[in-house]
Image (cartoon, rainbow over all chains, first blue to last red):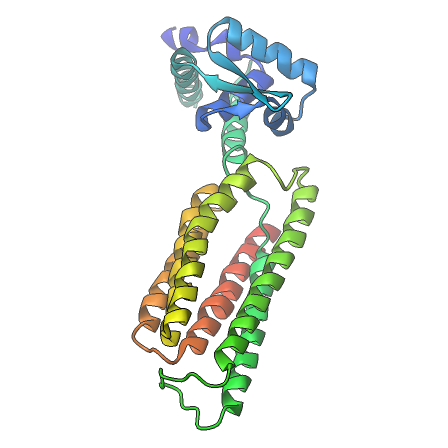
Length: 98
Length: 205
């Protein structure tokens, strides 16, 4: 039962899983890179990032490069810990079902 | 969600982690072509040396009328044509994979590749300037190898074996000053063709 508890509903979506994966292995990633990597629309990506920010998994940093805004995203400590827990739970679930 | 979905999730996670950190649009064909250019360059260099009277392999004191400048020009020519080839083939492969050529992974790759390479370039120019002609070939091989090992963290990780091979070859070449052209032909020619062929076969699978 504890395995099921560790499956995080917040990550029950491919786009969110993608955002978390990219941020796990990079210090920070900007909006356009994420968009290209995950092959999603602006609106779709923005809404999923917002959801991850709401639960304090993702940190948003806005910067100005000249007149253009450049938004970078990174994971919080909580976000990293929750994602690792989620992946471990997935792994266990698959192993137990074998 | 079924078990199959979770498995797909995990493979997708792995895929994105790799794609967001490593630049995978390099083609094995680039290595093969670069190797061929290097062999042609080495042949031309060898012809130049043959034409120079009294030249003897193993003699590290040569400073004939600008022959080393001509060989340097050939080497630079080979490097430039190789870079152009790499650019064209990489762009094509990236387009096939639906990726752009200029993204954060490319920038990281080039940054880590160019630090040892530019250092080696200046080092070689200083060697030339100081008259240590014989050390230029080993130095370029060693620094090129270091550049590849450094870049291997940001692309196919097995390219590090090519880098290690170049470093070892460069160290061996240090003991055979005066045969630089042969070592260049092996390092930039034969090694590139071997690695490029292995990669090319892997790509086709």
